[in-house]
Amino acid sequence: MCDSLSISTQTPSSNKRGSAQAPQEIWELVIEHLADDKKALNACSEVCHRFLPRSQALLFAYWDPRDEMEERTILNIKRLEDIVLVSQHIATHIRKFWVFLGPPDDSGAATRYPDGAMGLIARLLPKLPNIHVMYLLPLSPGAMADWKDDGAVSRSLKAALLATLQRAVIFECVTLKSLRNFDLAFLSAASRIRRLDMQSVPVPQEPLTFLDQSPSFDPNPRRKCVVGSMMYYFATGRCPERFVNYCLDHPDSPLELGQLRSLSLRDPTDSTGANPISRLLQFCASTLVNLTLAYNSRIGEYFLNLRLNSRTYA
Image 1: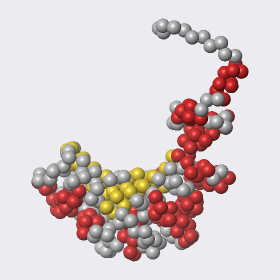
Image 2 (image 1 turned 90 degrees about the vertical axis):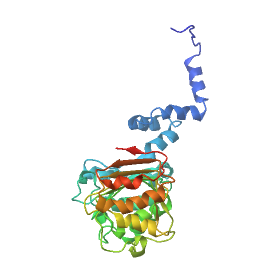
Image 3 (image 1 turned 180 degrees about the vertical axis):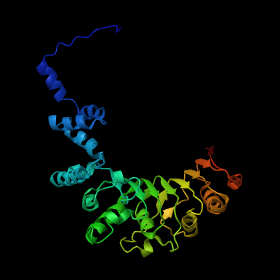
Image 4 (image 1 turned 30 degrees about the vertical axis):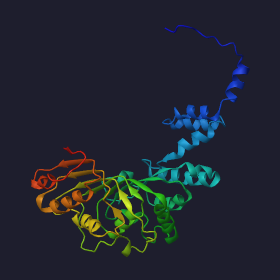
């Protein structure tokens, strides 16, 4: 129970004047409490002009247009494009964006963008100047069919999308399911990849050249894309060792693996995993903080002489 009771003698009109004189920071703190309630934020943005700036910033900071119905996904993208055209300040709030590039036969096809969506996205992204994080899942054989064919998206739209990616994008998570040069070139357009998952990646016969054989990508500026975390999944005969060896053997490789802080190794075998994994661990031992192992072979012998900040065995 409280020790004292205060009773306000202010009239409703004086309360109204007091709230009107409250600093903008107070109003923004009120909005922060509603950050996870999109309906409430939308209502606040329409009810009071003092709520409008911060509520709009939170509404559009993280934007995912996907819907269970393909028609609604297309409609959501078109609506955002219309909003950005009418109210250009909205575009400055958008920091995170979902782009799902999945082939029609992918197991996650339910979340794949419908036909025509990538053309809209390619037209929309260049209008969003502050895109910082892009969720990209996954890159796999046929995954770029939505927009890489000339018949699907015009060359100018491709250039606009790639220019956006090369500007300042951080990929939150990329699941790599193939080592085609097109996929590698797409990765190299980013400035950072927070988590790179390599799952049962087939090893192609073609040389790994990243941007060199990908005319759709502008090779300049060729900056480093730093990979912060990597999950390395093995299946017999499908180890992406050429990818790792290429990154380690070529100092000019667009992907920088030397700053890995977290590495998870799943089901490596003696025949497929020992050489590239031992090289990778030696290469990033000075920065690696967390190492997770799941294996039943002698590959662990390669880790005994490495000095890591900490190790986690799973």
